[in-house]
Image 1 (spheres, rainbow, N blue to C red):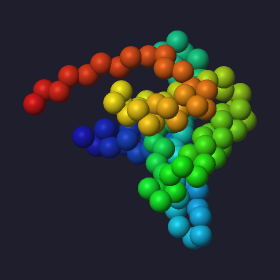
Image 2: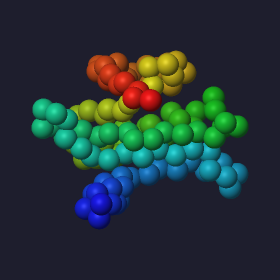
Image 3: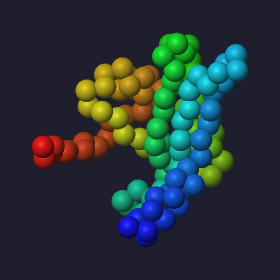
Image 4: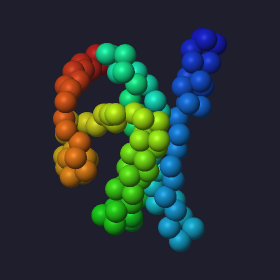
Length: 112
């Protein structure tokens, strides 16, 4: 259990967070880390992107993803990857508008 906690902390501390602030309030945030693709090639991985409901549609998410892209370029990473839900049409449309392509299919099965 202790080893798992240490791995989780190490992984969490490796993440970089960019935060968008408007009028003194957090309008959104994104986390990114460097990881290896299954091929062994390093890439940037977006763990979370969240925009406050009252800031949606005003470009906050786009600015945050531009920060991720700049961060990845500074590290000479050639690819950014992320996951989102198959049913999350608005997120999928958002990422498509930014030039992201759906390249993988993740399968899961609830055991409840």
